[in-house]
Length: 270
Image (cartoon, rainbow, N blue to C red; front, side, top):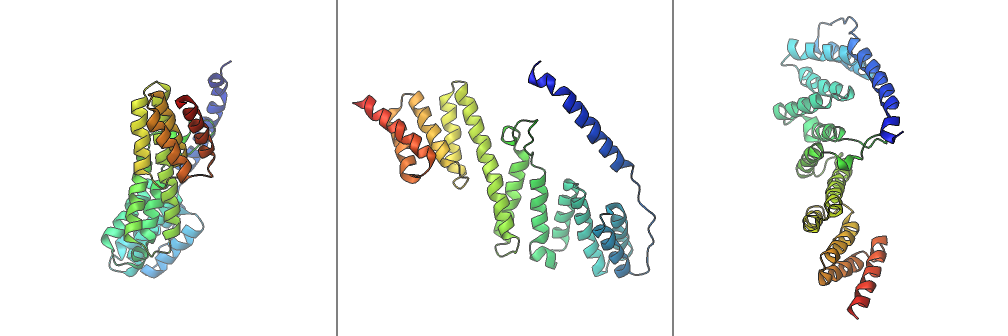
């Protein structure tokens, strides 16, 4: 029996389990809510429900505040907490839209100025990136549209909020996302090389070096680039690439391999 066939029962069981979980969530109805006479009181009730993870009830209170008391400061806060409720429910598309609207209509709000809303936009995009799961192909083999969206928003945050308390978190997310893009380009380069398309491989590898200087994959890319030049019988270019790898990353294990290739090229030269 092939591996793919042997996995069919596993996928079937998981599908049933996930379907059951999904149906349970969809069928859940809200408990009756009791509205108060002030914006503050209703907002506090919404926050209590949000804290207890009763998201549907929380949203009811926040919507009531927003619609019933549109000029109250609690109406503005309710808009933000609606976005938080969507995010907590893992409804990231709705959450991102809600945070973006909050930023647009309340640009001077403290949670906009300190970067909180923008950070949640970034995190919402990152949450939509395909993850690695042992039963599925690795994420770098998949379409990277969501990763590019995340990188765009993260770059905007870094430009607009250089002193935010969320800066370190955003920097890490940015590095991780850029690494995903670089890994994808490296995967495509290897794909071309395996199909005997060295020129296309070189174009991809050079793009990685140019576009992702801080992705942490340069030693691996440079080694593969040198090997591809050898495949094209461009020995001088290969020697130059291997030498640059050794000079820039002398302690990297890819540099050790590059030294072996340099030794081989020197022997061939003699």
